[in-house]
Image 1: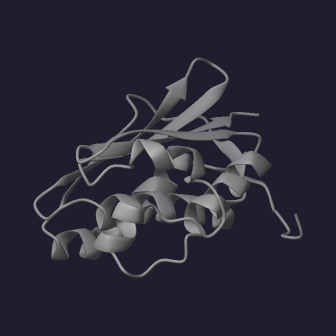
Image 2 (image 1 turned 60 degrees about the vertical axis):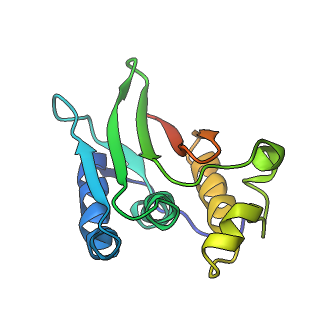
Image 3 (image 1 turned 180 degrees about the vertical axis):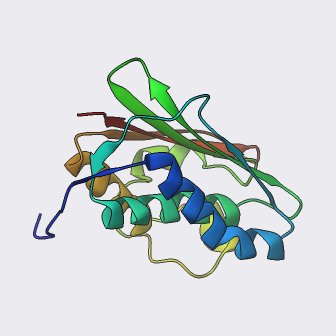
Length: 160
């Protein structure tokens, strides 16, 4: 709660595209295809702290790349959810999250056991920080995951 937030109107899909570009090298090294589903029409600008939201996008997309096996796919999308909210999602076909650990995934310093075996670096703070930032924006973050099949992380943000 000590971080200062500066909310400004942002074209969210541009933020997403910039983050995809910045992580493309990482995906290419693992031969992972990144697919971005662009909105059918230009989304309304949304008032967010672009630096903090970049941290959320980077964490979610980076995790998807990190935990997807070579030659996999990471799908990213953004669109409107009704007239009130913006919906961003990242789907991978990676290692997934074990059922017994799903309730801890947003906890500080937590890393799922299958993640620590696969990727040794990581502090276990990324999803905790992402959740804090999303909540501070009045939004929600959640996921669906099937072990050994992949995960989809969702972020809903209010338009106003």
